[in-house]
View (cartoon, rainbow, N blue to C red):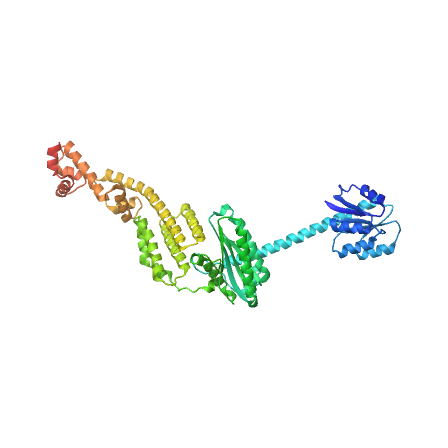
Length: 539
């Protein structure tokens, strides 16, 4: 409700005004009644009313003095002046302070009601206008912030290592994204939150607090854009070169504040990665990438809270010279042959090679090796239709686990666990998938053993690669398809030799052999007796 204060040196007048109208119906509450100008002023300062009804002549401060002091105090309120005389000079003075309403005693109810209603509407109109302006200002700011964040997101380094296609022209970016980048220093930071909890366990509360503290850097920068990641905040800063020490001091204070904030929670640690300084705006992507890399250095420098990328120099490397084509083939062969131990050994071998062969290898090299092997596994799964929701979920868990890993050992263990679980799942699904085609082929051989049958024919029938079918058939049945075909033919021949009077030539043909001599040779090889000997012995 709106507030009204009534001031008159006559208590009866104050009481009369308070009872003259239904103030509650008019959406007003009487905050107080004062009988001197001094009391009225103190009451106005305390309650900040929307409306003051005051007599012109009062002890302490008269009406004009009261209005003047209230305006000087910066308190916005409407006044209705009341008087027992037609004192035009008082009304004129009151108008200097924006007072529009003047009533003579005795006060007429209708006239007071009309003025109060008009004032109420003016107040509501102002409130509505202020809300509109505030909402508009908020909306404009939110839109500008979203555009800025969209720009920053568009130039973030991609996981495949390639740069974004977004052009990095300062004037174009300022115009298109409503940014205010100026000449000076460009530098990125990453505030990385490591946690043992899953995102749904409340990490967002901490990440939001981090983003607010990062946003405070705006006061010392020409421009500052930040976006939340799933485990922290990344920001691009632009400041004048002479502000460098002040910015660094602010960063240290910010980091200390964040550490103090997260200390009230269990299971959280935080690292601040600070990327390279660049003087050219088109190097913004380098700023971001080096800040991200600086955070990754924490797996080597365990106790570091703030890591400057520029403080370390590591040997350059080419991942393709470490994970060669031969090594990729060995890894895929291990998957093909369902040898999990061999697949893991490929990764362990490469890690051992850089650890003992490279004196000054970059910590991010370990990330890149793990990422490359996971990419090879992903490509393999996509190639053989094994890339599904289960794989995507597992990949997400691996990414999060590696993102939170604080040591090289932890990254290795998480990658090994992911690859092992995926391969076990692949092999189980492959087994389930393979069982049906093998059953179909066995049934076909059992029904058509007397005909010519070859591996390519069987592979085409079940839509499988012939070599792969041969491998799967032997794994599931313990014999090759040709051995199984021979066994079916021998079973038929044995049955005919014992239970029919057919000749050896006829039995050979009914069993799938056109050459009697070859049939006899195969029979003796498989059964240990010639066909004629078998007949005499068992018929």
